[in-house]
Image (cartoon, rainbow, N blue to C red):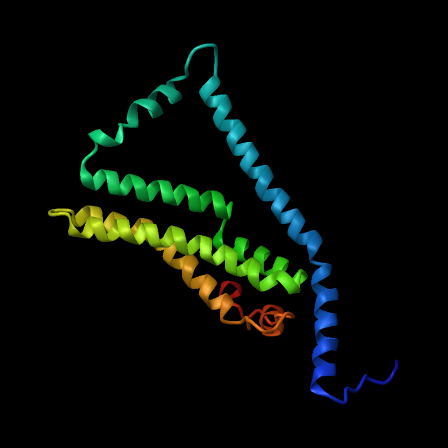
Amino acid sequence: MGRPRKYTTSSEKKAAQKLADARYYAKKRITILCNKQKRYQCKLEAQSSNNKVQSGSGRRSIVQQTSQSSRKPLRHLSLLERELEEMRVHQRTLDDFLCGPLANYIDDLVLAALADTPRGFSLLQRASDRIRVLHSEVRKCTERIRRIEGGVEGWRTAQELQSPFDDAVTMFEWVLNFCDDDDDSLHRLSVAHRRGKLPYQQ
């Protein structure tokens, strides 16, 4: 074995670590693509299954009729029901965005960021901003429900619906805390990920 490489300056050591990280996470691209393909395939299968159930024979299926009849126009809903329905719409948007468990989505995102370090931080930031927008809308609904007279039970339901958004925002905040704006290599994030120190890894 050759002698271990010695670095005369911290900048040389940092550059070498950046190169090593780039090589390591470049190999992870296959994993990232496979995970994305699996999530996309599951989504297609779910949509296909739903379409088969609804199409059935030549006439509308019972499942389709039931689902349509249960959807009241928003103008006929009470104020509380309308706010809860809006929250459920945001929840479906979040589910479509994540396409699976939150931890799996963030891990794929972190791997993608570390495999493309010059643009990695902006990739994480954009995903975080999108989650924050949904979280803000859901919190507004929860606050409006809290002010509705006699809406205690609805407020509890609203808190339950808001919980996944709170978790997502918190998880992104923890991950972004490992990033430095001026560090293109995302060194601290890379070290934390390798050691399994990121919150979703524990």
